[in-house]
Amino acid sequence: MSGTPGRHRFALVGAGARAEMFVRALVLDHPNTAELVAFADVNQARMNAHNDWLAELGFDPVSTYPAADFGEMLAKERVDVVLVTSVDRTHDEYIVAALRAGCDVITEKPMTIDAPRCERILRAVAETGRKVSVAFNYRYNPLHEKVREVLAEGTIGEIGSVHFEWLLDVRHGADYFRRWHRDKANSGGLMVHKASHHFDLVNWWLDATPVEVYAAGRLFFYGEGGRRHGYARDYDRAHGAPDAADDPFALHLAEHPRLRALYLDAEAEDGYHRDQNVFAPGVTIEDDMAVLARYSSGASMSYHLTAYAPWEGYRVMFNGSRGRLELEVVESDFVSPQAAGELKGAALHGVQAAVEEGWAKLTVRPFWEPPREVPVSGYTRSGHGGADARMTAVLFGGHTDPMNRAATARDGALALLTGLAANRSFETGQPVRVADLLTIP
Image (tube, rainbow, N blue to C red):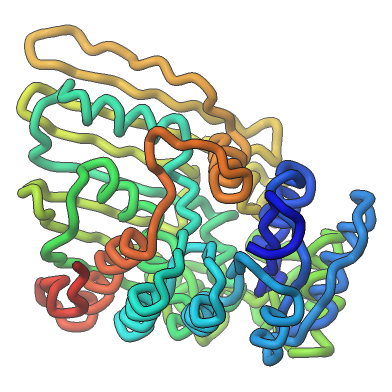
């Protein structure tokens, strides 16, 4: 470790919207253990926007580097830890370069988007002895911690099967179809970009690894299917388009100061449009996906992800030899007309409009006994259930973690494998053994 004793020097690559949560956590919450020293990005305007926000918080700007000068930044700024929040398909480039430069890495999920990139990261970890942590913040949600605790205690016995349903509403789900995620070559599709969160949870809850996956998925609602359903409007991107003015699926960047600074005002540099029409041609990811997975423990999982639901939340049920555990989370019970065109930010999840309600309930249903609700303390409806602050306290603040929740490169690979196998099964119509994609020690 270089720099001030007791403080790690952090650099961040990928200065988009998700970076803001990490930047604020570094400078506001963990100044005694972490020091932000540099940004790298393909777009100077985005880095300037983050420096402007640092100034608003009372901090000096940090150095900025073109992404092509990433290696130079690591050496010149004496970086200890790299934060990777770039486009998913570029994660492996920065992770491997950072490891080989002697840095540790914290990367946003997914760790990467395909098996060759994953293998490259795992090989670099083994060869350098450096550490990769994957920001699976859902592990730090108090609800999810309690689920792991109840299962580990054997309350419902041996787990035979899991049923997991995740619903993205027509505000949050739509946002994946406006931006770079809509191209599977960038994101790996929602089975990788989004569901890796969920697959990691199941691996963690069951203390097991995926063995075989069978899946079916299609683009049903968004893309050119929007014309069939009567939602299509004839514009490419919302900004400046009259047809987008009253479209509930349109994102109006000019009305959001932070998004305007990060994207609208930055377009001249790279031509990236953050507000594409969700029903325009060019979408190559699925919006309705079903998965059947078998695990090393013998348990099975049925999983469904819907990206066009009227409400947002999830249900997960565990069937065991001594009963059943049920978790229901409603993050927003509907999308209000006033908020339909708002951005569903990573830290907001259903709380933008006061009229929208949410709740969470964890229930044990033992054999031959009445069901009982399990109390959970610390859960909130912001910051991913309070998980973001808890995660950054471990990753940046060096807080002790008796639950050992920090996800390693191996954990990132195992979460990725279920989604990659699902994508392969979409293509072939056949079950896929994950060992045929990648062998993980």
